[in-house]
Image 1: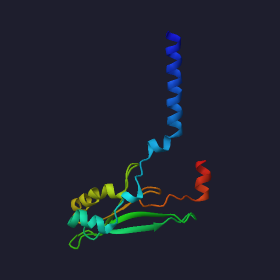
Image 2 (image 1 turned 30 degrees about the horizontal axis):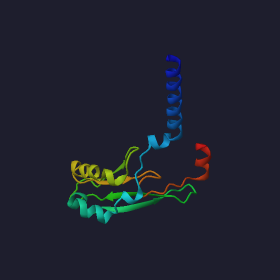
Image 3 (image 1 turned 120 degrees about the vertical axis):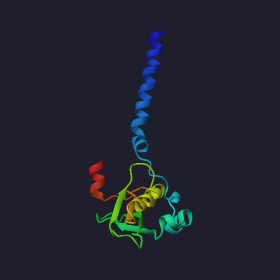
Amino acid sequence: GLASTIKVAGVAYAGALAMLYTFQRRVMYFPGEAAEVANASTMRARHGAAVEGIVDVFVPVKDGSGAVVHGYYLPPLPLARDRTTLVLFHGNAGHVAHRIWLCAALRTATGGCGVAIMDYRGYGRSDPRYAPAEVARAS
């Protein structure tokens, strides 16, 4: 009857909440796999002149963890009047290789400015290690 239907619905709801709690980080963050992230030479082969001069960038994180974050750097075009470099951090889904089209579009739209795009720790080819103090704060 109605009581058993309500009981089943309650158990199903509690199970769904437990699953969401258990897997909440996977629901919020979609970092992609490191193997999916192409190196700069592969990006040049795929996108040609749109990413002229692209290089891989690896930046050490100065927090004692030994972590290194990865990104791409598209230098200003040779004829660019403005030698500014824009720094781009993407959102919670994907990695830098998914956003290379945006880097190329920004460089074109700005008349040739440089563009640097970096992944967060644990995204793409960036190291997922955190400093002990950060791990303690997150616990």
